[in-house]
Image: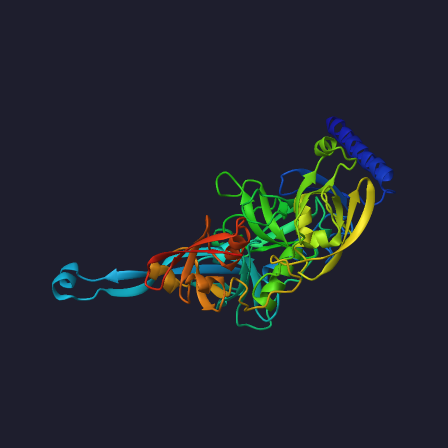
Amino acid sequence: MKTMRFIIPLLLGIAGGFLAFWIMEKSTGSKERATIQHEIVGPNLTKQVVQSSISDTQNNSGTSTAGNTDLRYAAKKTVQAVVNVKTVQIGRAYTGNPLLEYWFGNQPQTREVPRSIGIGSGVIISSDGYLITNNHVIDGSDQIVVTLNDKREFDAKIIGRDRNTDIALLKIEAQNLPFLEYGNSDDVELGEWVLAVGNPYNLNSTVTAGIISAKARELGGQIDLESFLQTDAAVNMGNSGGALVNAKGELIGINTAIQSPTGNYSGYAFAVPVNIARKIVSDLKEFGKVQRAVLGIRMGELTPTLAKKLGISETSGIYVGEVITGSAAQKAGIQTGDVIQRLNNTEVKTVPEFHEQLVKYNPGNTIPITLKRNGKEKTVRVELQNTYGETTLEEKDNFGILGAIVEPLGKIDRERYNLNKGVKIKEIRNGKFKAAGLSEGYIIVRVNNSFIYDSDDLKKALLSTNDDGVFVTAVNPKGRVEYFAFSLQ
């Protein structure tokens, strides 16, 4: 009897358990397979809940069937085409005995030694070894060494460089290299997921993710370019010159700058839009210099406050404050007070947006510009000019700078004359420079109040002379400073 008192409750408990399991299975058996809940934590550390089936699959467009962004394809494709760029500046080390030099005239011994080493990144854009980096990465370097993702090393040659956009074109002697295809930076949208790929702190092939935070961002004169892509993908020292790519692995920008109180990443990074970089690279490759188109206006961004002050109905666009005499704008009929709204059918509401579109064109290109005048829309066709007011392209080696061809200083001249700026006259013909007394071998370091670092600086300084008077500071081949004054008239 005692045994039965224990067995009966046990059997009843087991039966109850089976009954509960049967009821639960009956209530859920007809439902479809349950979904799995994923928490995706993005670069900005905000959680995003995504419902997806276990069978969700990825494709090469960067999205899965559930719609969430997957950047693995873009990362795998990009790291193969992003390189490490190491720059070396060479100095001279002197050895000898001062007493022997004084008493016996012994000459001290010198040898070249690396003075400083810099790091950066680059992006291969063709299978035969052309690659893009930032000008500030290679500026002042005597040797450039490029290390590929597979650890092979090559000495790189500078094909051309542009300080205004901070873009430089390099070439290494190699074939069948992986390279990135150009995307279209005009099509990039706010909130779009992107990858920044480079070599921060010399850590090769580092990939960070983020979104496009802003377009046509102006940085306040750090470099002349006024239209950057802004992203919150982490970028640090060594990322400069690296790739910003979309989810398809297409190149949409060249990582260039960060905004930080410490010099390290603090939330925002900036890239040169690839549509600008592509044009600069094409010019450097073909002409050795950038062909810049000029409209010939002084302008400002129209705001509702300014519009009210000016008494005009338009509240956005590019307000034409002055039209330069003889400029492309004047010849096309653009007038002071016009409000430019579209440049070649692309809307421009800010000055950075205007510059981003204009930089794509060459002197001699004719483009439609849509504007508002007295409330009425009007379209004019403008034949763009160069900085000299001409519609022709500048030749690779011309004597356009007052009859002289100049070149940047090499390491020998920098050390011999103890200079970190200036351009050297390589060749000279009849013109203002020669008439003033300058000749081959002279190093121009200053024009009026502007220091000269390259030929573009020299052109700007000469063109900005309002009273037509030019005062040149130069170093002669013997190392003495000389001064020259002349008129541009």
